[in-house]
Image (cartoon, rainbow, N blue to C red; front, side, top):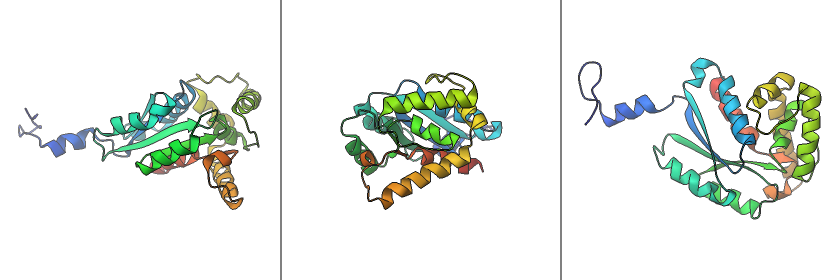
Length: 214
């Protein structure tokens, strides 16, 4: 039975949906990691001004790499026209990295990928994206720089990670650096994400969210 509004009249389905839909967007992020991306994006949401936080949803869901696209489509099926679907994952040792990206994009899902790992994106907050080819070295080196800049040990499960990055680093500069790296890879004739290293598209997602609150 339809609920009634303040005047006692029954609300239409459209009115009920409008009440539930966040004004600035509902970002559905599906990732294949247990902590890093979730901590980063939930931290980003918490750092938004309170009035904006109530208008923009960032929901992070974790699943296996090969299940990301299906999970994203499954969850986007609810109020599909209002949800903004992304998958967020790393090159790391993922088999079929390029294929996953192209398949997702062909199905209307945006992709925040990082090569070699998510830490290469966070590296940019401290002014550079060094030419590191493997994820283990990238995480290790980033941890060293992170500790030097913040005075604290780096933990993938640190829920305060985003705030610390912004306080000790420069997000606007990070967005610029990531975009410059992407453009450099394209100038060098690299067309596949697996060939673009260091590189990321996570900045496109972060930049889009930040522009909405500008």
